[in-house]
Image 1 (cartoon, helix red, strand yellow):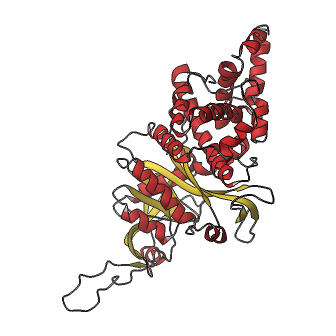
Image 2 (tube, one colour):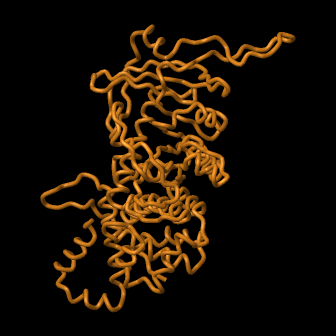
Image 3 (cartoon, helix red, strand yellow):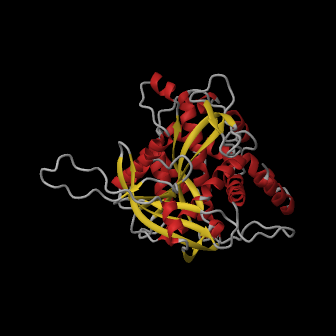
Length: 449
C-alpha cells in the first residue's frame, strides 16, 4: 500500500470504510496524483504524474469512478466529522450554502445542461454556461494560523433538469430542496450540534425557511430578505363555533415601510466581510412571513445601513426571532469564504478539467475534488500543529498569513518527500543532489501549477 505523510495518514486511513481493500489502494494512488498533477485532473494525467507508484493496469484506476462499488455518503460523514473537530461543541456550526456551475465540454455527458453563470452575469446581461450545477454545503472554520475564516466543502448534490429527472423516474428538485436534503442528512448524522445556515442567491425560498423552522431545535437560517416581504401577525385564537380557523393574523407593514416610518436605525459596530468591522445603523422587527399555500414562518428581519456610505443598504432575516440583530449581521458576512473556495478549487485543483461522462463518474469526480479541498486544509492544519513552520515567504514577498496555495504546496512537498521519492530507485539518486539543488527542485515541483 502507498505510504502517506505523517500528517495525512490518520485522516486518509478513515476513508477506507467506504471502499473495498483493492479499490482503496487505487483510490490512495489517485488521491496522491490529483494533488501532485499539473493542469487537467483527468485520470490519464493523474496516472502519468504518479506512474512510479501506480501498480496494475491503468484501466483499473478508471474503473474506480465508473464501476467501483463504493459510496460517497460514508466519505461525506468522515469529512464532516473531521471538520467538526475544529469547532468547539458549545459553538454553533456555520454552514454556508451556494451553487456553482462547472463547465464540461462533450456531446454526451450525464447531467449536462445550460445554466446561468452567476460570476459573469449581471442584472442587464445573462451569460450561460454548459455543464453541471452543484449545490454545495460548506462548514465555516477558523483555523488558529490565520485570521480569516475558511469554507470547507462537506456535502454536495448535482442539480438535474426536470426532463432528465422525469426520464429516470426521480422527483424533480430545485437547488433549494437539494440544500434541505443535505442539511437533513447532516442533522441526522450529528443531531447534538447546532447549525446556522448562511444562504444567498437561489436559497431564499419560503420552502427553505419552513424547513429550518420545522428543525428549529437543530438549525436556524440567516440570509438576505426582500424589503417588501408579506408579513403578518400570528393567527388569533380560534373561537368555539366560529367556523374555519384563520390562517394568518392582521397584515403588518412591509420592512421597507417600517424603516421609512422610523427614519433612523440604531448605531452598531458589526463584523464585516474579510474579518474587518464596520459602523452601521440597524433597524429590526419581527413578523410572520406568509406565502399562499405554504403557511407562516416567524422571522426577525434587520435593515443594515452603512454609516460610511460606501455600501448599499442590505436586508437580512433569521428564522430565530430571538437572535440579536448585530449577531445576525456578523454571522451573515461569514458566508463569503464559500466564493473564495469555489475560486481556489478551480484555480488549484482543476475542478472544471475532469472529463467524466457516464453517470457514476460524473456523480463521484466533482464531489471528490471539492472534498479534497477540505482534506488539504485539514492536513495542512495538522502539519502546522506538529511542525510549527511559518507561512511560505520569500525575501521579496512577505506574507502575513498562509493561503490555500501555501497549504497545497506544503502537502505536495510532503507527498514528494515521503511518498514518491521514498521509492528505493528514486531515493538513492536524489541523495546525490547537492542540498541547495535538492531544495530548489522540491520547491519547483511543489509550487508549480
